[in-house]
Length: 199
Image (cartoon, rainbow, N blue to C red):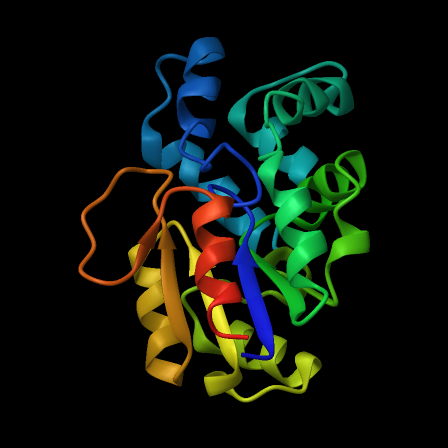
């Protein structure tokens, strides 16, 4: 193995992203789920700014502060730091995240994540999102690795399927407690054991 590629939400971050709709419903209980997903999905591919998402959902006032209040509910998986320090001794480390450019930048700076990754691919910047294979190919090209050189880790099965079709080894980080027929880890300690066994 030459590289480990991680997802952000539900792996590096404790929150899976499933919390956003309930969070919005606390303020706007009558909004339908699809009315929340529509601007959110557009921000994930760079068609809207993150502040425009909150504006379209009906928020008014200091949108920067409103956005910050939401983002500050998102917590880091503290085990990531120990994992990254150990793994980078022998492997490259990359991140692929479906996220708006602004949210990703804020969270990566808050938790000092940029220092740990050799390559960072954010859907809102690239205007393509997982499971589109192009975001995986882009990341592989920047890593200088073939698919067989890489292990991809995500909490969503459809993203793993896309990476696996390209020839990557895949592991489900099961923060969402789903059924999966392939390899599963529950935390970074278990993931480290698997990666270390391939060195």
